[in-house]
Length: 262
Image (cartoon, rainbow, N blue to C red):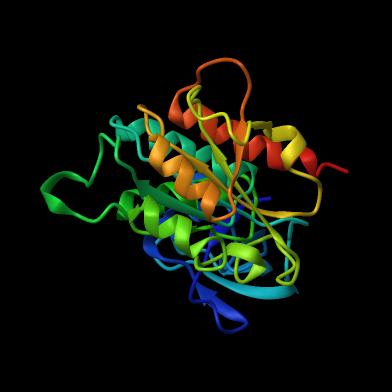
């Protein structure tokens, strides 16, 4: 399957952008009559045939529409503190999209080392969006996860799950929209033992919606953990090893994925 992103598709005929047209005709060597797939990033997969194989304006015709393609049985929002080395956070974004996530919320914590991008730009960059689109296409998914702006952790804890785009099945690839949501916070603090941390594999039953918080390199503060618990978050452990932020985040995404394997 060759998958292309077409967020503005609204008819049976669609013209790929210049970059996608070149990739289709010059790189993949798809000619008139060849089959390819488009997705709008909102869950619809379009089976198409090439009508005009022009490397500048490749035109395709929709022959079949598949709604809710690949919709998962669970919803997942990951709230993760960006790493000092942004490449590592981008690696997490890529892997999270490949495995399956509805929304990613970069969070600003007391111990965060990265507070914004260079030159004062907002965290949500075009580079990150392109990376997520590429990961969506590579993994043959029809849902593009939402990427929120950098948000203070206190605001995330108070908003809970439903306040983010794509969460709870409202626009992402998982969720039922009416069932309870699990709220989990992964931390490594040994001075915060009440309540005790639960293994994440035990805290994630199948077909459940969840928001999982992963802290910065210096971990969440005791005050942040206490605020999370006060707002209904369950402390969880992701094993005995001390993991990097991006590793812990990917492990959490995988835990949700494996809990829902048939």
